[in-house]
Image (cartoon, rainbow, N blue to C red; front, side, top):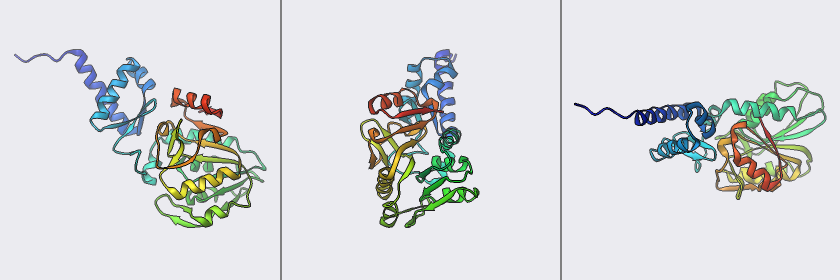
Length: 264
């Protein structure tokens, strides 16, 4: 006679299987949202994510987990992968960031899939000037006939279709802009904002120097991640726009660094 599997064990196995499917489909999951969905405690979900991390299915992130087979905190994912991850969050962030831009303002859009959403949602108003080094952002802005575009030249990096190098940095020397919208690869309370690519870090630092406001735009999957090259500290940020599911981590960062926090 076979032994009957306990209900609690069966429920745990089914829940973990569902979470595994969700993280592979969405790219990331949040602890609080999972606890509400499955009607279990936060501690139970954390144990589930720890179990899935040990299996190599997920990688832990503050407030949740990310898909281990899609995003490696040490290695830069391809543009196609980035475009597929957290699309809804990036669109909300991009739409909100674009709403902060007024006629007559000049902005810098850093290379990235979140800043691409800003470009797509920018109002097509006279007097707005956009400075960028990103080929995809340029293509999106070409659809808008009133916005003035300043393209930073340099050497094309095909991995993310953006321009970098000494020429790109020097092009910013004589510019003063109102806002920089800065995409990030890593966002850590102690180590600040980081990226995978050295030339990008150098360019981003220069962008921050010439901007009156520096606003980071990122979904919650980047929190707690540290990449090789540091851009700026969190105390140098004016604001952060992120998704509402980011959890307590960003609140701690806001309290310690003093930037404006916008949850969308």
